[in-house]
Image (cartoon, rainbow, N blue to C red; front, side, top):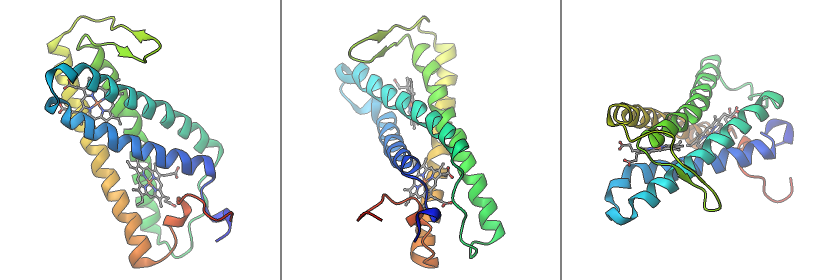
Amino acid sequence: MTSAGRYDTVAIALHWSIALLILLAFALGLTVDDFPKAWEARVVNFHALIGVAILVLSIIRLFWRVGHPAPELPVSVAPLARTAAKLGHAGLYVLMIVVPAIGIPTLLFRGRGLDFGFFQIASPFARTREIFHPLTEAHEIASYALIALAVAHTLAALYHQYIRHDDILARMAPRHGGD
Ligand code: HEM
Ligand code: HEM
């Protein structure tokens, strides 16, 4: 396949690093209450740092995407599937921004700051249950929507790879062997 039919290296690197970070953030978010109490602050902080990285990388990725359109899909992809892919990808981009964006006030209204190791940001807010409770709920629901859409997206990629055999996965696969 020629490089014209693939995403560029920056898009591919961002796709896979963000996907990995989302899985990690989701796993940590779900299990944060299962760690020993003494670790809680550190686990939440680690979760939040990964989330902030997702937010920053996703914004960079969106800007990159505006200047670097997706490669043309093969003609074998039906119009309905093209529309579904477009809507699905747009939904993923929105949720990749919205989930961490809700996470930030969720953290701050718990009275927690962010510890980057070499510098800290304190929360400007007092711990306010009436605010952080609904925010946590919204953050959780949005993160479930993100994961559900990512699972559907993965199933679509696998369907193309193993049932349609149309090389869609290769468009986003890391380069190998100097092609
Ligand atoms: C794509 C990125 C993210 C995903 C998938 C994600 C996912 C989750 C999930 C599933 C929970 C558990 C919710 C619950 O059970 O009530 C959670 C909790 C939380 N998240 Fe995130 N999150 C992300 C980004 C962020 C960011 C950027 C921040 C803050 C800067 C953040 C702060 C929090 C906080 C404070 C909690 C509550 C933890 C606790 O129970 O003490 N998250 N997140
Ligand atoms: C949290 C996980 C994931 C997220 C958030 C995500 C997000 C995205 C987004 C937003 C796009 C559209 C790229 C663009 O046009 O700018 C995309 C494309 C793509 N993704 Fe993912 N992805 C994830 C996981 C996966 C996995 C696990 C696979 C493979 C098994 C995969 C395979 C692909 C492929 C093949 C494309 C290109 C589709 C096309 O050519 O139209 N993704 N992904």
